[in-house]
Image (cartoon, rainbow, N blue to C red; front, top):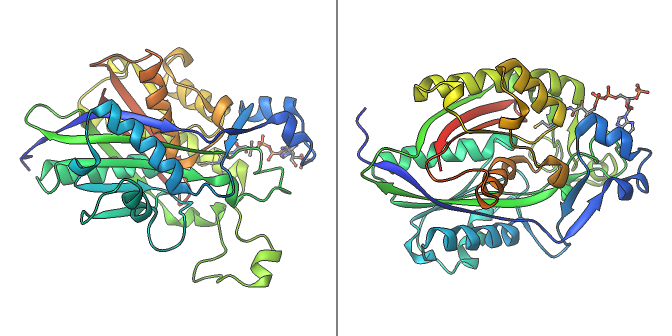
Length: 329
Ligand code: COA
């Protein structure tokens, strides 16, 4: 299929809530230690949103930064996609709340749910919409407040998650696309290994679902770990193949920041040194769909990436879902 337009990445932005929860703070909440968390996950601290700071608030702050970096006014946006699994409410979408905060009316907006793979899934949707000429300027957001869906008595999960938001502005152009390729995959047979079982139509909210902590993330960590590594390696290779690029062409790999040991295992299998892998999970924890976009934003702001560099985003999450994208910043 011939594409009408290429896709230009105009700019990125990110926002982390002020409050920081350190490993030392976690030691006061559950039976754990800084040593255990550091050696098993690489995580040191994570940000927690305030009670009165919903997902759309942090999405708004990241979006304003991305719009500034892109030199784009809110009224120039003609579509908003928010990747999130921790929305303000089940309905309306977080994208609707974000739209109002940005002061925009009458454009289509929606949320996309693909767990930790959300941003790369959203990137694929935005790419396709722009290429066929349906929308010209798209605001893409990954925004999560996982800490509000965490069982703070479960040491297996509460050490892992945090809150944060990232945003990107994309625009149609007549040059070669900055999104060279996207590869996506999913297998719903693994749904039970990582889920948030309460509050939907399977388990509508009752006193029992609250008492049984069904409104918090449940995970069989070891099984998730085992599945994540081969799927991320496969996705990374597929997106490179689709982009007709080699590992050596990529300046920086930005994998989903789930666990330092997952990142190291993926790098080892791909035979790339950890110097070429971006890591910020020690400061953020796992922030699901917000991980790759906030990491990308940090890599650009700190000069780790310069204009024209090729980057590969590689993701894996509940579902299971996975994917990768080769992009030019
Ligand atoms: N502090 C101290 N001990 C802990 C602990 C904590 N926070 N959490 C678990 N443990 C204990 C376990 O109870 C277990 O004890 P036992 O042997 O007496 O039963 C022991 O540590 C080992 O637990 P295990 O689950 O085997 O550890 P692990 O090496 O698999 O690490 C995870 C656990 C969760 C860090 C790891 O499996 C992981 O990161 N998985 C992937 C998770 C992920 O990325 N999910 C999101 C994907 S998008």
